Image (cartoon, rainbow, N blue to C red):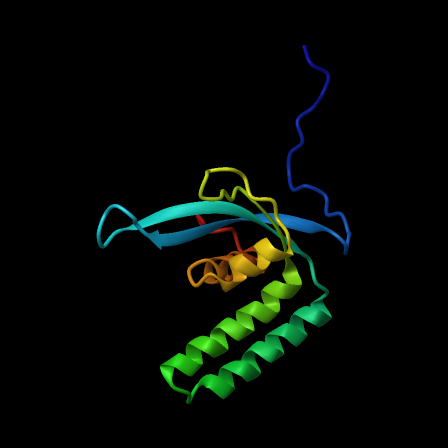
Amino acid sequence: MSTKSKRTGPIPFVLDTETTFKWPVTVLVPSATNVGQKVKMKFEAEFVHVSQERRLELMTEHREAMKEIATSSPEEQMEGLFSIAQRVLDEVFVGATGILNRDRQPVEFSDETKKALIQHQMVYPAIFEAYNSAIRQQEPRGN
């Protein structure tokens, strides 16, 4: 008979302002073989915690940028949204695993990889959504 007891209840909170965390990212990409269909691909992103002060600054920047682009053309709105997401991701997106190259070999995360992921039109919104989902105080959705 085991003398170890099972823990019940929530896990104790550890205050560590330097931690990172991983979160699943789901990217929908057009299928290369099935016309008109999308394929769900996944990888894990690593994010760094930012202070509440910095988070509020980023949110304020986001709101201001949204006001600026609200009356813009659709093209300018897309550029504005990309710019907002890029600023946030440049700061909080610090790693990724589960990404393969064309030869199906694992891709090491680097500044170049980060830039390529943030620049990819189908990937950056998925990373941005994953980050926002992770920091919301709600139960995670089935990402």
